[in-house]
Length: 104
Image 1 (cartoon, rainbow, N blue to C red):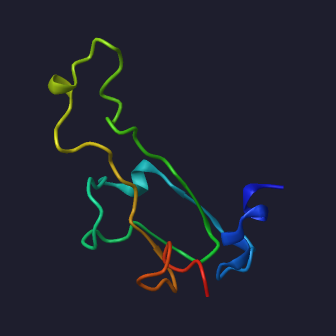
Image 2: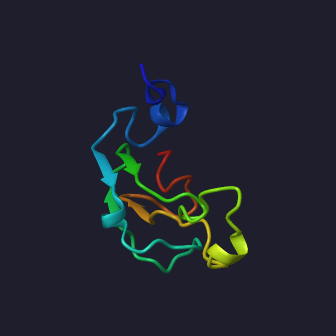
Image 3: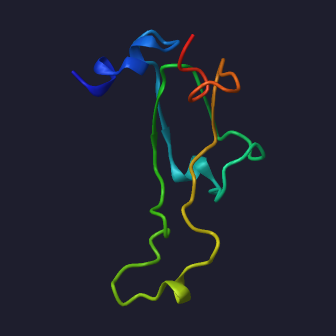
């Protein structure tokens, strides 16, 4: 059994405990990463309730720090840290619902 089989959110959600399609959000599909959350970026992926998303992403420093001797002040482009995947649009999601549409 996997985590989804034991998840209360999985059982009580709109998908009624049945996992849907698995989507792979690659760096190529993501395109430009965003560094803040908000309503402005267009969704990079549309999914149905119960779908599973596997996402490629960068670490918070986008791989620029490779050793203890690397100086963040010289290598990082502040304030552009911690790139965010998405947004991901969940079909049927409504504002104010956890993750768009977890509970019916």
